[in-house]
Length: 289
Image 1: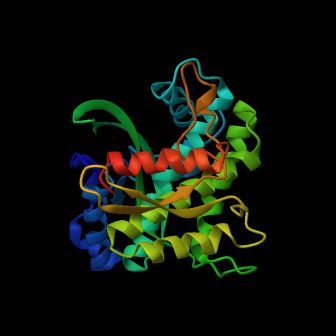
Image 2 (image 1 turned 135 degrees about the vertical axis):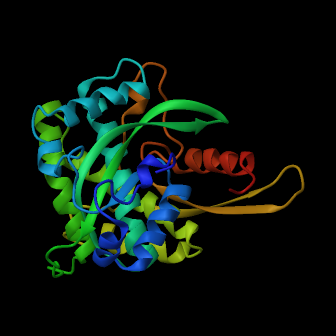
């Protein structure tokens, strides 16, 4: 979404046709996604020829599946297939959560993925441009409205329905248990909703909407461990009190098992006091942002 290509609303249909299918606020959400979350690209409208339907994209042995797994070597050395799968489901579900969550939280709109493309893009890392990849989601209005079953919201049902075949194929391909993958997906959703809430100046709502899903008994995304925690620290320069909400994970991406890898600052495997000390250091280093 950050380089212009990701935010073309439709490559093959006039903008007037898109506007007829989507309300005006959808275009505003897409524009905000481009600037605030460029790591996940989005277009509006039926899938064009250079996009694959989700079922084809994530089919066993597909180019999309194998390319996604191979790309995880970008983040760590000597990865096994299980570690690649853990990274991939976290990577993919985070981008999916950002896109679907932005339309839901930002405009109350429910969309579904019509097509997917895994594309090259350039990201900034510590002020330096780095060649990378991202998922580009082609969205369309929900064709059939889902009714909440067992207390599940339509958004939760749609998220789970989209990820279930992805998780199944990764389990078969890489041997990573489904439960481990669902925990990583829950982490991604909760983290994305926190960031979206921050972006729309309603952090509390972002957290509340995520918790309504990941704390619902019976949900595939349910977790006892997953939570938010406010970290407070004193700025050593000016003595100002800094505070920030962090999403505390329930799953593990297994990065610590890569060559030279370590635990993430919010890792479920860390002792609480160690985790809080790490997050306080992060908070002070970044001046509360």
